[in-house]
Length: 541
Image (cartoon, rainbow, N blue to C red):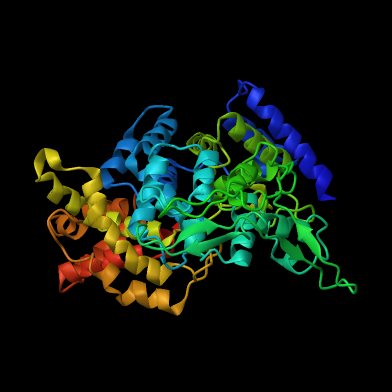
């Protein structure tokens, strides 16, 4: 049964805020959990990955792009024994971290739905500010769930509801999935037939927070806002109930004590001021954010800890991420409990959690499986290949081809006015084509990877990629055409695109291609294209 399981987890998290963080770093404890219960762990686990693989992996996960050649060489030649930890800290402190998290949480929260009532630019700026400031995750979610869209300054936070048109069943399901890790869709019509904990009462308890809310036109807010009536209840019955008995649901998150709801007194409900959003004194929606993020709600911390683990490691401890129940147990239950407990104790500091995962040996393992070793993905003994998101791929292609370097050089000519924000302003518009070609269907978070014919054609013939190849001042093709030595060409090419040194065979292949070429520049362009279109480039490994 799920109830005792959730009660124990809730008790553990309730105790956490009063505890001092453990003296032993979390990343050390992570590795102990991973090794526990694995006979011959040292033989089965892959060794730590080399510096070339690590620097590329860290840049993609923490900055959303690949390193520049100078950054790569600086890391590879550094003799510092703690250079990996220093690199992680440097990336977390740089603007690229907020950009990368904004991309990830956009997909997590909105699942590539069309931008309907909140413009993308405003939404992405809102996310950037939140992650630049390292806003605690519980506060971030409270802002999302409490915003009504009326205040232009906070309107982007209401996108989760507004761009779903506040459709009751869609919003109810997505609240459970995204914030609690529980896909309750089946419980819309009846208790889940095989999962005891997924019940209709929980589904409609979530919906009862929002059933009185509705979208109201508001010219001042440049679009619809969320208003609320003072009355209205949610009723439900099971399709399997022959007696057709109706049940009334009060607002409640499973495991959280419900707040006693006063009965409305006719004629005493305050009137909204002119041009104000209709909101009753006893607003059910106003209580939603507190209930979801309540310390009593163990599922909230557990879900985001699992999702951040999946972001870094390529798979959730509970997998799929929104299927957390007793018949789909976590691969490492004690580890998940510890991640959630420590996250709460640290005030929902997601950057801290990302850092601890990145410093673990589990994160830093090679993706090459040891010979004759049985290493299923859910054991984390070998690094899992992770396909680049459309956003990562776009920024990685721009960096690999030297487009980013060329744009940065152009901006530097502006003198003291030049900023990284200006550079990003030039790069970000190119995301549109990559998202359209490589992104999942609307409503699909894209947890799995499968190449399509359209994607192949996009990479082979699309102007978004091909347009980055021709030589321009400061880009990769420009640097390569000024390099006469084929060996130096190979070194620069592989460092820029794949963040590694070429093998002897690869150096020979480059030399052969250039020696037999009638048009050296065209051959160089094709070599760059072949590498950015390769499987090695398409995955974080």
